Amino acid sequence: MRETKWAQWFEQLKKELQSNAYQSLLTNLNLTDAPLPQFVFWDEVLLFMHGGDSHDPRKDTVLYPILKAHGEVPDQRWVTILLTVFWPGLDSIFKKRRRWDPLDPDRLWANTYWSFLRVVSRFNVELRSDRLVQKIINDTHYHLRNECRRIWDRADREVSLECLDDDDRNLAYKNKELIAVDLARAQEQRIKCLHKHMRAGHISELDFFLLVGTKIYGQSIADYASGTDLDYQTLKKRRQRAEQVLRRYEK
Image (cartoon, rainbow, N blue to C red):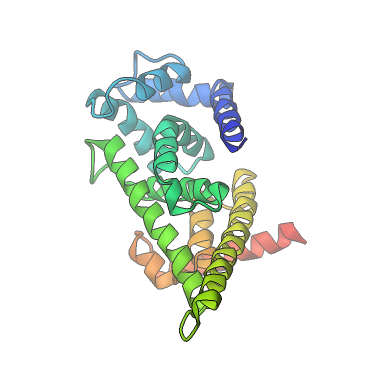
């Protein structure tokens, strides 16, 4: 059932790419970047990127201008394009790592999606211009593993297993799993809410990732700043402004 839901989402994304709003992006990309003149429609780009060998260097020449445009102009359409391009790779990660979160496949998929968004939001083509597909998939896999570990570590802190007999320890393990499930579901709902605000243009993509990282996943602004080109004070002010905007829309 879940697989059907995700397949429907994928088909919806591909259909969205057929609209004029997305077609104009490809047309402009063809006008400014030489590697893509052979593609007239996005479904042709997807056919090439989803087929053949993922190590094919020609895929770098297709992906590079897309990643570059996404880094230069914050636009949710580029995120949708990249998600659609990388969908088979994300689906592969999800299926291979089911054991990381066997209780809640929806949560595992949400964390796979979130890990991918974090990777592409910070990707700099000036620092890396080859083996782009492998780099993004590997980094997504790495961030997903860390996120799954964080969920269970947080659950461990909620339930102490010291000084328990076998029966109580087994019950505590079950409670720990339930705590982790509830926590992740709450996080997923909050991320979906922020994502809707971003798609509506209420907050920027940068604000979205800043709020998710610091407000939902508990990362300090200082730690978040270390992974960006912005300083602590700038990010602090951005988060305050974004929170003010959200309060205004959510009243």
